[in-house]
Image (cartoon, rainbow, N blue to C red; front, side):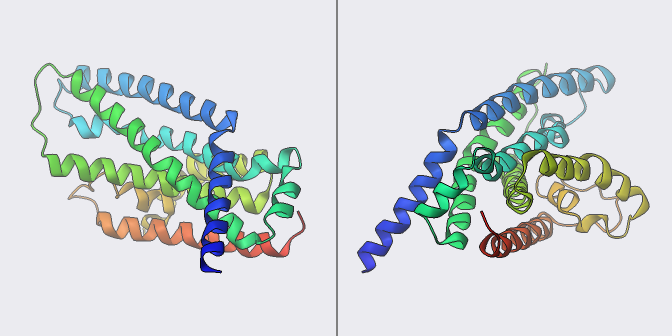
Length: 251
C-alpha cells in the first residue's frame, strides 16, 4: 500500500508539472518576462552610469527592475491555476484526481519547482548585464551576491505562489489580474505613503527586504529573514484559504 500511495503521489505530481510545462502561455509569459527584464535593466544601467557616474552598486542596478519584473511572475501564477477553467479542463482534472486539496497543493509545488530556476536565471542575467556594462570592475563579495540572488529568486517564487492562490480563489484570469496588478502597482505604493507604520507587513514591501538591504536611515526596517517570514506567511495563508474554498465549491 505504501508503494502504491507513493506511485500515486508521484503520478499526480508528474501530471501537474507536465500540464505547466506543456502550456504554451506559460512559456510565452516567461520568454516575454526575460526579454522585457533585460530591456529594463539596460535602461536602468545606462541611466545610472550617466547620472551617478557609475557609483550605483551593480546589485542595486541589476535589481532595479524587480518592481516591474514581478508582474511577469504574477501573470505566471494566475495562468497556472486559471488556465484550466477557461476551457473547462478543470472537470477532467477533478474526475481524474478527486482529492482536491492534494491536487491544488501539488499544483503549487510543481509551480514552485518550475519557477525557482527560471526566476534565478532571469534575476542573474539582469545583474550580469549590469556588471558587464561597467567600465571598471566592482568588487562584490560572493556571499553577498549569492544572498541577494537567492533572496530575489525567493521573492519572485513566493509572489508566483501567492498569485496562483488568488487565481484559484477567483478562478478567472481577468479578475485575478485586475486585483493583483491593482494591488502591487497602485494600492500598495499609495498605502506606503498613507500607512507608513504597517507598510512593512505588506507582502510586497516585506518581500523587498529579502533581496534589497534597507537603508540605515529608514525607520522600522526589517531583516531579510523577517521579510522572508512575513512573505511566506502571506503566501501560506492565501494557499490555505484557496484550498479550503477549492474543496467546498463546485468545479
